[in-house]
Image 1 (tube, rainbow, N blue to C red):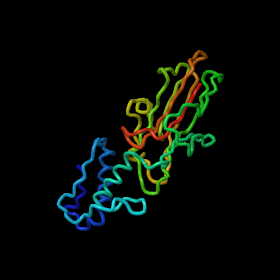
Image 2: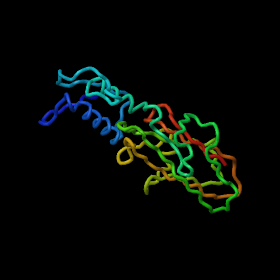
Image 3: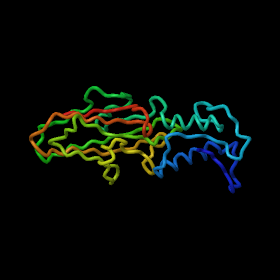
Amino acid sequence: MLCPYGAGVVTYNSTRDFVTVGISAIQGHEDNDADPDIWIIFEYADNVIPAVPEQVGGYPANSTTGMAFYALKHRDGEPETLDLYVDEGKVGQFAYVKQSTKADMVLNSNVPVGTTLNYTLHVADYSPWLDYAACIRVLISAGQQDGWDIRYSIGEVDIIATMTSADGFIFVRENRVQPNTVQSIRVSFTRTSVVHHNMTLTIELAPHRGSTVVDSLQFMT
């Protein structure tokens, strides 16, 4: 239940702060890995919060439906505001492909063993107001990555296990995708053997855990 409430906070004004406090509550749950599947919005101990409008000029209004407007947009995304691309040549930038069916990047399989190919994945939020606890994950065809050691990191943190898990890596806490910002993930492919299978590595991006994919990229060998 989401019930923004200012008990004991003398500066709280529900007709001004209801949605702001509600957004903070949603982000707080996400940052503590306690994100529910469903939010119920309730005006606890308050009878002055308006039901409508839900938005003003594209921004959530300070109302009950305005809180729902934010929660739905935060979960499902605003069209063409969440972008996944690779730094080299801005491959994939402004190309919102939900299920990529062709290679965006082709790795050179003829490089010597021990060679590392580095790329940077960028997750950009073009919205002026909407943040995302975005979800990014990796799918590898038939589980084959023979001949390559593939690693993922954000900053100095290794995120291999989460990137390749069913739920993927979630952009929360200091990694939250804020309005008009870009978050980056480093990907390295190190050649480990001259023997290898052809591989298709698909990277999918969704606005939220469990939401529909809005953009994707493919690496192929």
